[in-house]
Picture (cartoon, rainbow, N blue to C red):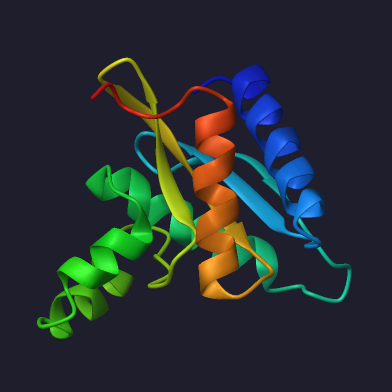
Length: 137
């Protein structure tokens, strides 16, 4: 995930958020979960970039959308809680993270914060679809 690609993805996410009436925070991380681009949403939402980065980091680590991970782990609540300390930089255990693929390779992930978990997940998914970052079927 290079800076130019991450910037393109972040700008698309901001547009998708606006199209849905949301002012979102956006984080794009590389495949190891390192931040490449982070942009705050509402000026008063100082926590937004942290939340978005944690969601992106979780999706990058497991190469799955964060809402799917939370569903997968619903009967094992201690497992995701352990990740908040295990994964460097921490993770956010909520919908709004989505991996980004280039072909079959996961090149990073996006995290969205600023709306409800359902809206954040929707903006993340629509953004990844719009930039051609879904894995091949």
